Structures are given as structure tokens and as C-alpha cells.
Image (cartoon, rainbow, N blue to C red):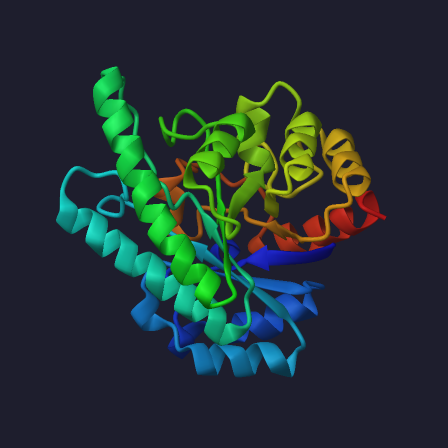
Length: 284
């Protein structure tokens, strides 16, 4: 397993013009994987980022940002087309920087919280499945995999648990589609985070893991069941990446999106430095 950090820890939106220094910074703090969170693909030059990664021998991952207006299940075909085009640009970026995976809740906008009639829910799911099949073909052609992230109930009404995520993967029915499990969301939604990881790994669909504390702060300082999580990762033979995606109020746009109103770490670098050290020890 390789350990890494997500750029949301420090800045957003990421741009090649202003933020390539984070590659050096992440490597200096002990990261092996640089996960770039991409709000606007036009701001990220694949060539420049690839060269920066190569200079420090860092692996890469691409993380999508699905705010309002990015929803593959939306009844408006224009919204679906725009979202699919955005996902296509993430796939192309991943291929351009040598990242094998595009992660995040690509199935819908963050913040959906609705009690829909069954027929409307089924129609919405059909639109999501159809769009993700198309995206999966594009990803496969680029040598990239899509890792769909279940979120907690306060952030989506579509996919909250590993079991629901596996059902969505089954409906899509493509080898390039799997799951991205996040310890923060699992802490809220799963009865047993280790069991959820084992379930997805046993299905061959555990493509990516985010290591996040229950308060979004430094991994290892909170209530996440790290013993269960790390033993499940080791015993299941997971060989993918484990990336810290945490937040501080310093990144104001993201802090508002994740409802973070107070400091949860001494500073941004502590999240990466201490979090990576903790994970390295826990996974040894």
C-alpha cells in the first residue's frame, strides 16, 4: 500500500499556475501519492503536473469535485452532458499524469437530500447507470479506473454504504468501475468499517481508500476504528493507495462545503505529517 495526501488539505481550486509547489511539499512531508482534487480541469496542465510528479517520483490520483450542477442523474440532459464531459476531462488528466484511478462520488452532486417516489428514484438511477457505463468505456480506453465513493446520509441520498455501492457497480457491470471507501463516511454509515472494507475487497472492487478522521482532522486523533480498518486492509490483501483527505477552515470554499466551522488540527501540515506517520505505523 502507498500512502498519500489530497490537495484539499492545503488549497482549492488547484491550478498548475499556482499550486505545483504542493507536489514538492507533499513529498517532503512523506507522501508517496499525490492526489489532485480538480474543481476546474481547465486550471490543470497535465504535462506540467506530470513533470513535477516525476521530479519527486510521486504516484498520482485524480479526485473529482461534484458540487451543484454536476449530476449524472439529473433529469436535465444538459446537466448530464456537462457532468459527463467533466468526468471525461478527469479521465484524460489521469491518463496524462499516469494516475490509474479517478475517485469521488461521480454518481451525483454532493448535498442531495430528498425522499423521492420509487418511480422517480428508479429513473434517476437508470440515468446514473447509463452515464457511468459510458464513462467506464472511456476510462477503460485510457487505462484508468473509476472509484465511486459512498458518502454519508447528510451529503447524498444515493449511495451511503459499501453494500449500496456494490449494487451500483453490479448494475453498471463494467470492470473499470469499483468503489472508493472513506473512513469518515464509513464511521457514520457502516456498522463495522472493517467488514465494509472486506466486503468490497472480496468482490474485487476496492479501488481506493481515503483515510479521514471522524472530525476531518488528523488521522489517529479521533474515534475512527483504525484497528478494524487497518487489519481489514492488511488481511484482505489490498494493494491500492490510502490517501488522507482532510480539511481545515483555512480553505474557506471547501470548509463551507463540508460544514467545517472550527479548527480540527494545529495546522494543515500537521494533518499530513502526523497522519502519514500514524498510518505508516498502523499499517506496518
